Image 1 (cartoon, one colour):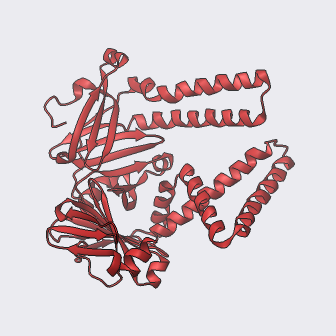
Image 2 (cartoon, helix red, strand yellow):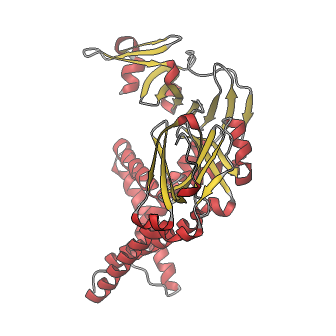
Image 3 (cartoon, helix red, strand yellow):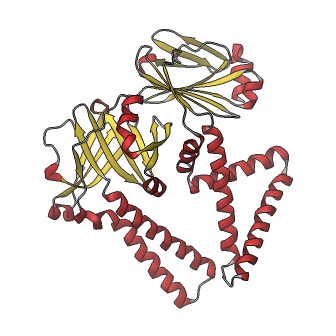
Length: 402
């Protein structure tokens, strides 16, 4: 609908003005809405071209600021002054590096939502026949897997096998979609006005991002990253490098963002291990007690499977948190700072200039006072927050901007 109103019927429903100081967009026919963005507040510009847009020679432009975004449509060859034109250096990762970045970026739970949404869209456009075919294929796969497990005398409830097959199929679908989005990945740098990064990627849908490195550059690690010592880097929510070795992180940040990785790190000590695993350890006890009660009361197998999954997830979280503990901490050096903090089942290492800090908060519980530890939460421009947990309070600089 937006493509029809604001591109095909653009002269009636939309009016765009881009000057040297601001971007002004008027939308609507009966009710006119006027949006004005100062060009100095723009931190990201994304140009997207789907297959339909490419057939119509159109492109969708999304302009991001620290407080919101603005979306409008232009023709394929229509100039866009907001995008840097000069591209001095280019970096093209290898296919295996792009595949690794897509693997780390694909989440299991997110894959379920993406796969379910895709099935609903297919059934709505092409009818329920294709939806039934996909479900039948997944059911047949689950039946074949059940027969194979029975051959090896391994008994698993059929519903658990079906759920596992559906989850795996959803993850594979989400991974392929992410891989296609990151294919033909290239990074450029530009020096027009201010330093900027240009990221291009995509096969069917083409993406082009222009980013201003004035916020945190974030390295995201998972268990796979810890084993391979490689992880992707993000800026303003966009992947700017799909695969970076740990020892190459300082050079990569300097080359792409002109950030310097601080070395004076305040790390979490070994005595703080219990504070890192307290949450999953408590939930592990809850699930174990519930599973014991389920066996005593002879509840259904489905409930037992769910409890076993909860126990497995919490055991996995405990192992991850212990591995992340040695890498967690806060670093300050000159004009830059870095925070390594876990969020969920991932470890985020954010590197940012000190002027990007908007808020800093220190918290200390009763138990932490006895051990001299504290948590330091730092908010960075772009509404991004990172918490360095269980770090020695006395080792933190007393006179610092945050």
